[in-house]
Length: 304
Length: 238
Ligand SMILES: Nc1ncnc2c1ncn2[C@@H]1O[C@H](COP(=O)(O)OP(=O)(O)OP(=O)(O)O)[C@@H](O)[C@H]1O
Ligand SMILES: [Mg+2]
Image (cartoon, rainbow over all chains, first blue to last red; front, side, top):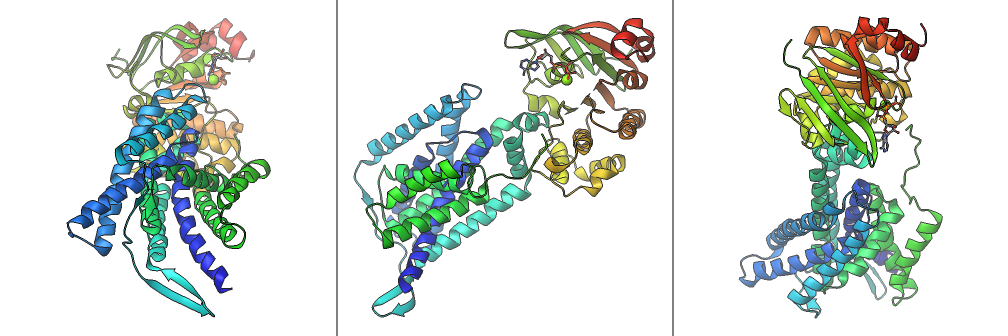
């Protein structure tokens, strides 16, 4: 019981990270109908920028604790957003209106470029950091097993919920969000109404990258080690989350992220930690076969 | 005659190798209602879309309010004061009626409140359905929404592609009346594409007949109504 509760806590905090990245996949799919395979690497870039930011901010002993984390997060979001914007501008926009597979191939190329770029500029070795966020609570003591809720896990959950709240407000309540949804539903009509659709698509990439940067920062702080390759595995899991939730559906991405995080955690805890990645891939395949529209995929009837 | 608000000069538009418009010229003066009639596939919708730069004219010029807009991006063209209720309605299905209307006013940056009041007076049905998802509206209601959304931008030139399509005769009459009233009261300029040539020619000051990408006839609404070739081809022998 206590053990299960602990897995639940771990699974949710991991799932939040997947959810944040999954939003980027699902948003881009919704608006231009492509799978942005470089998005996992944007997350990786976000983690590296956080690492660099953290070293800069803490090295001089200028700041520590909460202020440092907020500053690092903001820096990482800003610069990762710039990467997201550039990727779209350089690799996808010139191919708009080209054949359907072209941007997909370009995305795979972009993914390789980003990985190699980080590998060359930052080195291939694993980068560890000193734990930044310490402490936590013991929720429950069951014999020798103590259920721990770390400050870091609280931080992940609270930050993610805050970011999601702002993001939801942006998409559902603001003119920008409305323009994004309009482009998703009928891009040609959106431009007939005066929406600059190229700009709206750029902003979508910027927002997706900023969310991935939040995930990257949280990942770095929680696990303490990153390398240039983390984007691939985490990216595939987040993509699975997006598909499981129903690709194109924003709440679905978060739900899918939570489920993948929970499944992976419970799988590792009760079956086999070596095969934890297999769990995620199996879910991807099973979803694609049996439920291609995902959990929250569209079912409502529409007149066309 | 005053300078035209819209002038289309020798415009040709292609879909791939297919020439849908073959050197079309027409003008619309400020405050005019001009109608474009023609059979299915004549190129009427293509012409309205070409004005908005999507698809773009391959030859010829589109001049709006003295400015050459032929090469401008679509969103710039419409921000200049052109609104279109396009063929197929194209309401945003997963947005509410209210949000669809806000989209109409969004890029012009004008306060949507007076526009909302205006279109709700015109189409009280939309007021009742304000919170409903547009994708679940009936066909006729979607048509009303598409027209209302175009009006929300307070355009100087309104392009209407078959606004009476799918509407009950009573509602269709209401829409024609509404166009006439907007034109008389606010001086709104309208370029109207219609299958219902009889009603359209009665409403319009002038009209053009489009046959497979070419203008073959033009004149005042009354003149065209009297032409035997128009009666035979488009008025179903009424
Ligand atoms: N996207 C497209 N690709 C290729 N051909 C097209 C496309 N759109 C229209 N056409 C062709 O261009 C011609 C003109 O089409 P258009 O839609 O402008 O006709 P229309 O006069 O509006 O007809 P209707 O009264 O049926 O709406 C037609 O022959 C049509 O098949
Ligand atoms: Mg048409």
